[in-house]
Length: 447
Image (tube, rainbow, N blue to C red; front, side, top):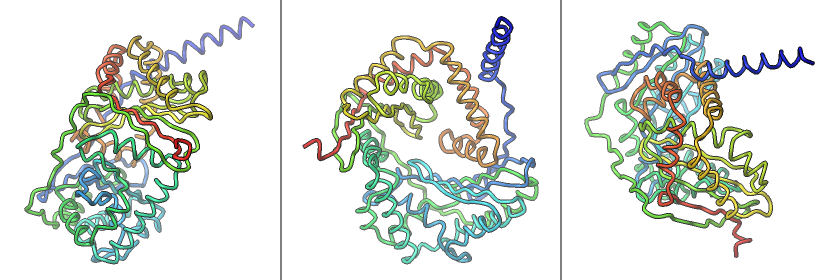
């Protein structure tokens, strides 16, 4: 028994030492190349010849915050339209250029950005560069394409929001958490706004935002830099830069001055839910790192504070979480809980605020801090093992920090967070006056 105890002690000590070293490990910087073409297109590349694949991504500085008034959903609509026909590509042919050679493609839209990404064997890189330049410059924004994709987006809204028991809940968190900033708009859009839209509206949106000086081309993988640069010049330099300025969001979300409360009633809600939101600093704030550490401590899996207290010990919630919703302008800090059967949103609010008070009033432990850093570093390193993961990290740096090299700085900032930093940001941003409380209940049970 003594021998086993000694071995176990050695293992525990070694594991603890490994964790500490892991959280403080130095990460080799990515050798990122940057340049800007004469038409304003930003080109970011990272050569990695370790596998015969390459990822091609184009990030446009346009998201749902840029949707015209009365046309909520246009940024998302264009995510779909970009896969339709161009002057030299048939509809859905982009899928054939990637999937038929064993690759893949997809896209996403958020409040701040719309991005398109592909992974293909590296010998198809030139083809993909031509195709991306083609749909940037020659997209057919015509009546048939517009009408077909409008129907698709509206059906996504029905299935993703109206048919889901908590679809309206997550929509409400966004719409009720902002007062003046266009972040009030949801990314997916609304059926009514899309119904009112015309193909001329879509064409104007395309001309305004889908242009080389509003885009960043990111390529990571197996290529030779000189050849890659030549292909980029060949296919993208010929695209002209429009002379008109790109309109930018100028609205500023005002600071909250008093707590606000709202009850949202919806059909087919199996269990009530509660959300407590606070305005966050913008994505360039140095406080984001400490807030992300707090997120890991409060909500990082089943051993986290919120799960242990609300789900395991009190058994008042089926799930409980805290998230940092990072955005170019003021983001959100969200506590949410879906209640257990027979439990109320009031109970969830009380317990969530109690956990908030705990982390404000008492410093987190060194063990919790170390564990949070370990998890974040491990997840980041795991993502950076792939070309696509590297490109996504670079793209996030471009949009949220105006710096493709932020991928080489982010983990250092996270590793530098102290116990005092965590307590400070939890006190600074989580004030009573900066709070919006949302109860989500079944409309039939609330009459």
